[in-house]
Length: 429
Ligand SMILES: Cc1cc2nc3c(=O)[nH]c(=O)nc-3n(C[C@H](O)[C@H](O)[C@H](O)COP(=O)(O)OP(=O)(O)OC[C@H]3O[C@@H](n4cnc5c(N)ncnc54)[C@H](O)[C@@H]3O)c2cc1C
Image 1 (cartoon, helix red, strand yellow):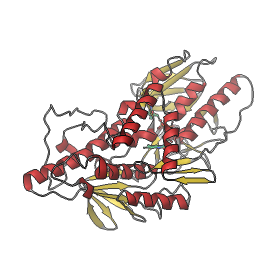
Image 2 (tube, rainbow, N blue to C red):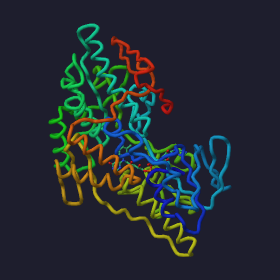
Image 3 (cartoon, rainbow, N blue to C red):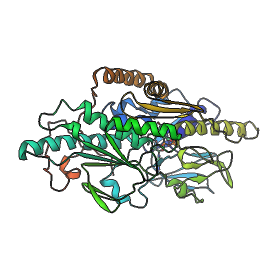
Image 4 (cartoon, helix red, strand yellow):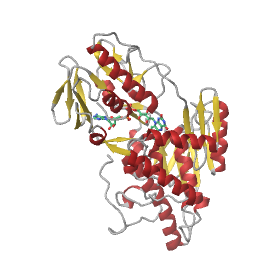
């Protein structure tokens, strides 16, 4: 269940082996989440970081891909339940439905502070960011003044830092020459973090370097500051409302509710505690892998999910061969984060790198891991173009009419005609 990093890599490892595999996902594509922020920033287009699952697995004759939304399981009858009421029987079940950001019990904030998890989210964020500039230009044209442009990002983990850096880049370089009346360079990018430093998963020295790099991009970082409320056009920080043209949420982790649907104990994030071989205690035929699994010392990263997927496939094949299972061992290959153009940090064991070299490393790793040669070539071409010209080509505003969700109180609503490259977005709840 799930064609993300864990599920897809498990299916690939079982390809053309003597087993029948059914891969179920509610989407027809695999998304390369580490590059989602580049879609949100308008560097890449959605199709460049995703690949149809059916196509990826076309040569795996024993793998059937099914588009479907899994709602639960019957562990005793060994079947998976889908929304339409259908059931699919299994001998082994691999649950890999991932996680998304957590609003800490305030899911109502998501409307005004979208998170970044899917291609729809990325397109929505890009739409809101670009529309904020459009709205300011229009206010300027009609009223001779505009509300200050303020972009608020909540949470300074990798996603928050990447988003804040990218918006800083857009405002200062990418769209600066496109507008006649407003100075986009004066936009505020505020990054709020509840903890004492940015990128807490990295060492303190790299975290400090990332802070400096954010500062160079004009991002104002506020540490030890919890956002405790979100309303249209503003966020509540330390008891005071801060006006915001756009708010983006990149804080907390909530594992898929399918963890709870397994009927077992989960931690506060909804992750399932698994046995050393990643199986469900009491149900050796069921495995929980990727971001849904709670394994001591294993981070919620694509690399870990891929390893879990491959490892579980190996254990399933060992079961069939009558051999004993091997407990999962995570191979830590390091962590990286980018901060706008040319800037990044990388922690590879005891090697700590920051700046251009880290950015180049980041580029190399992400191109290598992208699914499909066509995507790799396309992304490389866009990056070279963006590097040489400082221009991002995917800057079209698409999505639902602007006045429905982005008009902050006291601003001019924008009504865009049907011939202005607007398409109706259907994916977001
Ligand atoms: C913005 C962002 C940036 C990231 N950057 C990095 C990075 O730079 N490096 C890194 O290592 N990691 C990064 N990560 C983390 C990494 O993407 C995750 O750790 C990884 O995707 C987890 O893999 P997974 O297979 O567990 O879940 P996912 O990849 O999320 O896959 C879950 C799949 O399950 C499907 N699904 C969910 N619910 C259902 C259901 N009920 N029925 C059917 N299908 C369902 C989903 O459609 C999805 O395809 C990032 C994550 C995000 C969101």
